[in-house]
Image (cartoon, rainbow, N blue to C red; front, side, top):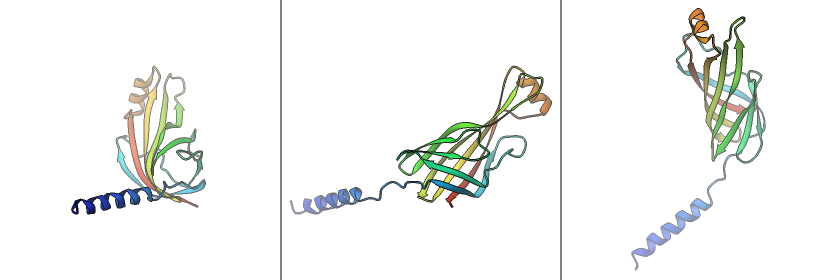
Length: 160
């Protein structure tokens, strides 16, 4: 019985410690800046057509959702949180129609990351390029494109 007491005391201490753990980090709403941007992967033939840079707006919608918006985005990224990790669903970054052809180049972006504080994130951004339309094969051949393809960046973001 005496040997069991220290185990029970340790179990109670661990339970209390878990209950007192720090709450989830809440990202600060406002203007943030891209920092430490590094190209980590590129399966496209050419250099990436866009690089995360400048500033973006982060808007907290609830305890588990926020958006990221930037000038380069066609639509704001819709992001969901689970603890301190987050995922921003793939969304349209840009589209480019080819004149006189039934083909359109689509560029989408998806972001996953971690909140390291209320004013700092670390993240990975995946940008995908694809073509849609009946004339895509002709456009890909004429433009010497490698589609579909994707490239990725790692970056940090800091609230201003």
